[in-house]
Length: 262
Image (cartoon, rainbow, N blue to C red):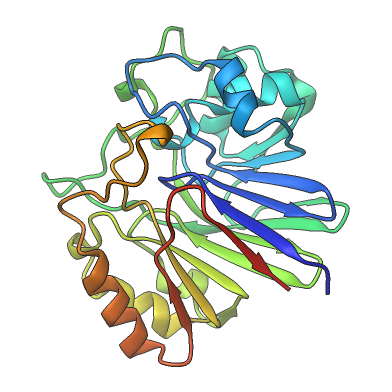
């Protein structure tokens, strides 16, 4: 089994490297909703990408994707809303793959299946910035213009190694039931708003490794280091996950930390 390198950049942004093939998941590094992407800054952290997978189209998941696709030539895989936002920024059609729920994309030893999922709820009990784009939206885009566009739970496979990402703290039990993966990424921001969220996810998915994501203050720069959101009970998640999956390793990563699987 070849080694898989997994590096967390905060939020739900992860770089996977397998035999030199680089897949980026929700790569958002600008971490300022009012700032545009700086390709020079992005290149320093993410100089290469073959594929970019987008779980949903909110700004803190998608806003840097067009710039990264522009200088890497990576293929962007996501919903119709994701690819239409990329079109608005001029990403070439040849680099865009639009998939619906349960859509599958293959390239070499890499495969991703976009399992249907749900987004965590906001204070008002609704999904923030709901809706979708059937056509490319006009520029410029503000944070509220990055419509959710539907949420996926990407199941990524790198040869024999698999990773399941629950990138927002909600789920569809039937879509993930019976899944086994080598690494489970679990977004824990606002998990308390989804009834029995952690219990349900770990009741559906078996894995030897559970890694928390999307618990950091993503308005602070990467250079500021890790600042957990004050409303996220990170230690409470660790205790609950360990109780529910006692044989699994529960990982609370540091910003830019790299995990190797294989």
